[in-house]
Length: 596
Image (cartoon, rainbow, N blue to C red):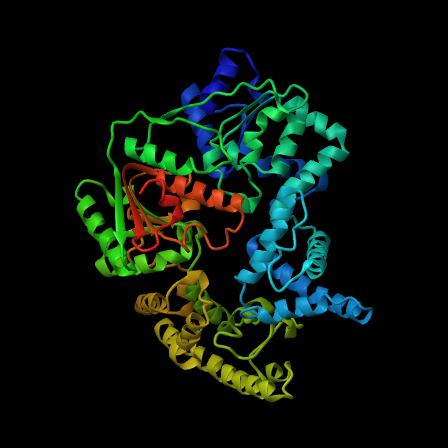
């Protein structure tokens, strides 16, 4: 629709393409729209600007503040900076404690509760970072209820101040800062705002239901004073509350623009008629939405299957049975199993691997990196090869646990010799354990220098104790991604066999990452509700439709529960031919009540 609108503006109304800005919410969708427009127009290039909100505001900041792509913080850097900020905040808090204030105890509890001091992917710190972003995107301060334990408002604010100070000193740009700082710049500099107002006189926005207050504030400024805005969206598909998105902006659009024309597209060309009817009945329970009467315009009339189950084994057995039946007429890549939470998929992956059914895990594919166990082994190799840097030592020092804490690392290099033994305090009982563990570490590194890749892997796993470390991770509930110990061991066994084909560790470390068994580009698609948005499949399975899974236990407010219902609506409407709703017969999700 948007591409046709752009073509209409240029060819029928004589609008200069250079004055048109088309915005979407992901780089991939913006690129897809651009390519679609070029095919539609028959041109090889166009002056129309296609991009994302972040690309637009980064362009503004890049010009005024000399930011570059290398200045953008990735998740690893954000976690590093936040941990550094935590240490700095603790030092500051200890001074406040002496003066009568006490954010110290809360910050100390946070530090003590971190699962492993050298682990980058720490969920507690990620929760704090998400709240930083939510504050920026909603342009409001977090409430006491939103602040993750064990922090309170005072300790949270102190931690955030130190984090932002570190980001600023390093001349870095947090992804969420891009929007806020861009909007603030336009407010302070009317001359810069006028440049963009003159440049982009016609603005079109796709997936408008995903907009957040900061994005809307910025785009309203640029669209003024002509206000040539054309937006397309479905308020029932607003599912990015954690990014600050809210359907309220779309619902109140005419409050901002009273003369706006509203057009309802009430024909559904994707889903079977019964899916359209029952998903509409389900989402109709939400109060914060536009009333709609959506009708199916497709050929399929019956596609919905209700599948009750008594336990998890029965649930996955039914999924496998249906997959086998469907595979005679529907390719694997046209089937998808969607989960509310990514961690819930592990059981299904084990079943698929056992049955030899190919699958593609979308989230892992998008990360485009080696699995963590492969990276851990490669980091041991890097260290053995002579990279004694703080960064590499940090990644292996507690795998297995050696009683070393991140805030003990003050040097830039940690070679495996006697200087390592003198680096860390050894006075107490834990210090003695640390000393013995490091003595063994030095001996192990000497042995590893002489081994082939196959034997290197075997030695790290069995003698150094990596397998035992993994088992303890699972026992403590700290396995990355919630993956099962049994699956990691299976993949490590396969990796070890794969290493027989390499002559040296150096040869393997530079080779591409090995994909997990049965993970192929033409297999059944495994993903979360969020990841499925914008996609469609011939057959869709929705397992775990039970209380405690959907709505998510953390959805406490009415608005959060309504967003959970919208997530289920998005997942249901991915199906072009068949939709399987698998629900617990004793406690089905409350969202199914209107349609069961």
